[in-house]
Length: 279
Image (cartoon, rainbow, N blue to C red; front, top):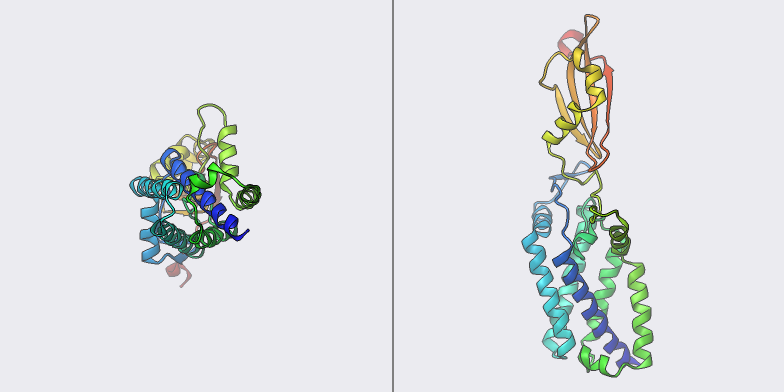
């Protein structure tokens, strides 16, 4: 039974590595900003560089090719060096996923390319830990993956089915994959969450100037230069000086940063009294 379990881990890891390779090479990740702060907390420089590298297409393709080579190697050879390299790779992935969960809660792990765009959760961390455990168990397997497939035992099939079901339950990528397949024609990629989506300032101004809210307040705006601009979550706020009934006012526009169906809200507010006026 122990030997059957070890051989099963070889098949499981080979399948996972090849699936990750295919996803990285075929499913692109959305470009996203890599902020210096997340929810007001500074991002360590090392993690910021790590996230930037992880999000680059060249790094994604390189990782995918490396995973594909490891997956194929597990199928054709039982050499200890291949098993050791696989264990090190999964251990490193576990560390990266854990660090992203703690220091970059807005970022996906990219484990399966663009399918892994959701923020890293406990399931992803637990999955990485279990994969590392499977890699350690596979080091004692006597057979290569293809040799196991040539004569699949009932025990191997049952263990493999149970493990696949477990890891499927721990994989948020499945919902993203099904979401892609259910999208209408021409929308074959998931929508980036608005709080993570890159939204250039030019896009914000274009959305604002085309909105009914801008038309409503355009005649009272006193300057084309905004007083302040900042972003919070799914909104970018733009404040303009205004003159209403000979009184100084401010118009605050909230412009959605969503990819689709962006909305604009507005409000007229009285400006805060300056310190000099209070004195």
